Image (cartoon, rainbow, N blue to C red; front, side):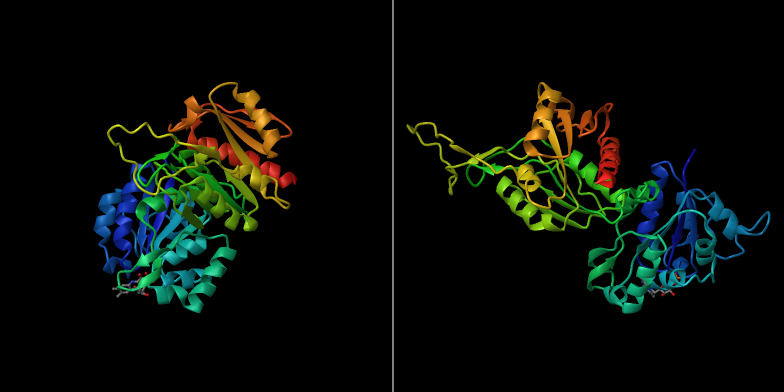
Length: 395
Ligand SMILES: Cc1cc2nc3c(=O)[nH]c(=O)nc-3n(C[C@H](O)[C@H](O)[C@H](O)COP(=O)(O)O)c2cc1C
C-alpha cells in the first residue's frame, strides 16, 4: 500500500521548492495530499500542487469536508506522516502553542501521525529568540525539525534559514518511520578512500566509493543520532541532515580530523578505506619523465591505524570497525577484531562490496557472528545500526 504524506505549505518564497518535492515524493511511490495556508497560495497556485500531486488541494477548514464535514480529522487519520515544507515562523509559533486557526494548524493539532517541519525564513527571523523558543517547544513535542540549511537567501542576506532542497527533504522524510534507537547519541563516521600523494598530481588510492559509510551516516541520523562525517575521496552524494562534515583526503589528515572530533562521541564507525602506507619520498614538484633517467622509486612508510588508535584510548567511544578482505573473510575478521580491540566488526568480501551498490556482510561481536544476506547498502546499514544499538544498550 502507498504511504500517504500530508504536505503542508506555508507562505514563503521556498514554496516553489515544494513543487519539486511533490514530484519527487510521487516518484518514490507516496500519495501526497497538499494543504496550503492562505499565505502560501500567494506564492504558488494551488492548481500547480493539484496537478503535481493528482489530489485536490485544501486551504480552508471547510474544504474537502464531504461526509462528516471534518476534513481536519479525516485527512490526518489517513496520513502516515505529515510534513510542513516550507514551515513559516508564523505557523511554527502557532503549532508550538497548540493553536488551530486554519486547516493546516487544525490538522497538526488533530493529527495522530508523526510530524516533521522544514523551516524556511530569513536569518534574523530564524535567530529571533521567540522563534528559537518555539523550535525548542516543537522538539520537546517530538516534532522533527528538518534543516534549515545555511546559505544565500531570497532576500539577499546570508545565514541559517534556507529550506533544505527537495531531494534532501524526500530523503529525510523516510527517517520519520525509523525507531529512534540512537536518540541522544553522538556518532563519528569515516568513509571513502584516502589518497596518498606521490607528487602534486599523482597519488595512491583505492576503489572505495564511500557508499557504505554514507549509508551508515543516513541510518544513524534516521535512528536519531547526531552524526559527524569525515570523508576522503567519495563517489556518492553527501547525506543531508548531518551535524558536521569534513573532507580529509590523506590518512594523516583523516587521523587529525578524527582525533579532533572523537572526544565528544559516543560511537565511532570506521568505514573509510584508509591506506596502510603513504609515500615517504613525496615530490614537491611534478615528477618529470626525462630521457635517459632511471624509473623513479616510490618509498613507502606506514600510516597510523586510525581505528586502533581510537579504540585503545581511555574512555574510547563504542567502536565499530570494517574488515574488507579478498579471502578467508571470517578468519581474518576474527583476528582483526581482536587485534584492534573493537566490540563490533563488520566483515565483507571486497569483491562483494567495494564500489558496489549492495553488500553482503558478517557482524562479529562478543556474543554472536551474524551473516546478513546480500542487500542494498542502506538495508545493510540499518541492520548494523540495529545491532550497534542493542550492544550500546547493554553497556
Ligand atoms: C515576499 C515574502 C516572503 C516571505 N517569506 C517568508 C519566509 O520565507 N518565511 C516566513 O516564515 N515568512 C515569510 N514571509 C511572511 C509570511 O508570509 C507571513 O508571516 C505569513 O503570515 C505566514 O502565514 P502562514 O504561516 O499562514 O503561511 C514572507 C512574506 C513575504 C511578503
